[in-house]
Length: 139
Image (cartoon, rainbow, N blue to C red):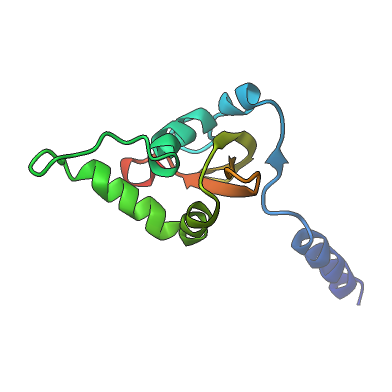
């Protein structure tokens, strides 16, 4: 009886724990936070790899036929396809500013980095960028 009660208390305690704590601070402090897994990379690296200005402020270099390397176009397509909510936000509000990181979560083999988009009308959207530091999972 005591054993089953102790197990029940232990399971309820473990089950109530958050999976990852969101670290807060200034963008400079958060950018310096590094992953704890096998690949060593920072939250700033995750934001850089995502190329948010290129995707959300449309500051990409326009490509002419025959000049595309495939990587830039594919990266933009994948990011926007995986972020349907962000694409809808852009259509409705545009993007005036990108701020962040505003929060970082260290996962066992990845980092989650929160970035805030501000629309031209003042509306805000939080993007959660997740990366494991590998080339396929950079941004």
